[in-house]
Length: 336
Image 1 (tube, rainbow, N blue to C red):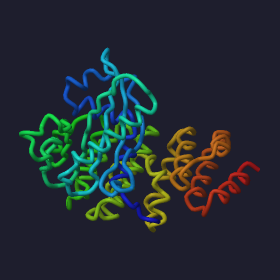
Image 2 (image 1 turned 180 degrees about the horizontal axis):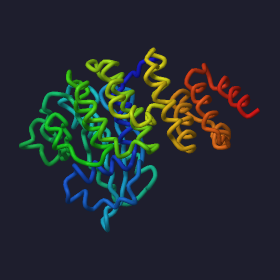
Image 3 (image 1 turned 180 degrees about the vertical axis):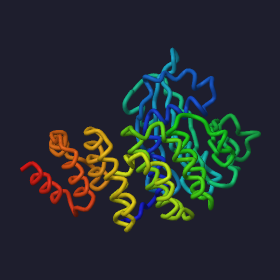
Image 4 (image 1 turned 30 degrees about the vertical axis):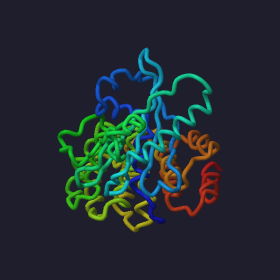
């Protein structure tokens, strides 16, 4: 399997591009005078990046927009420092990126006031963030030139300064936060059952299935301290006894790495215990995990099958087949 080039960037975007997670963050960690004005029904992803090639080795970003109740529009800009170290001049880069956001807005809307931007820096290094959040602190001669210098500061979300108990929010935000906080920790293997166990209330949902896949991909590619055995043991402890329904989308990753024995059992038990719709969803998730998408014609055919045993066979085929055309052939044979 080709390694993920930047697992931290990928996990951040997979998590925070979910509007419900980003909004949960805003209501949990943004100061109340601002968060309390955000109209949740208007909160939406505006653009997935303003970071160019010169900055992508340091940062990744997501831009949300929302209406403030009775006070116009606001942009909420997440800038993720995806290295384990901190850049002392983040405020300088933020100024550049914020100007890009405003210029993009002005191209779309020629007149009127520019919406305010709330800049949020997400940092998951092990050492406390020491860089100044004030842009003015980067500029000399402020005593005489201050009125001519842009004035703003960013909100820093430094995970190193939170205990696990202080991490709040909904299940997905808490799990994502704990994984990012401990990804460099030597003890992460011991912490996994407790962290992934938070997903228990969601384990029968498609969302939890997708999120667990992203979490395990992040752990396997972003941590140097968790072994395959610890990861498999944590999954067995949490899910195997209840059918292993959450294992389906992970099968491809682990089978290619030669760790299929326990997962195969989980897939089979999950199909046997699951409802027909669960079996269809697991098959679609396995195809999406393997090939990156599920063609509409395949979705239509999958929903036409009413035999769970047949769906189980197709799931196994999706896991081991070499390309999508091979799977389509298996699908045609199943319909015959």
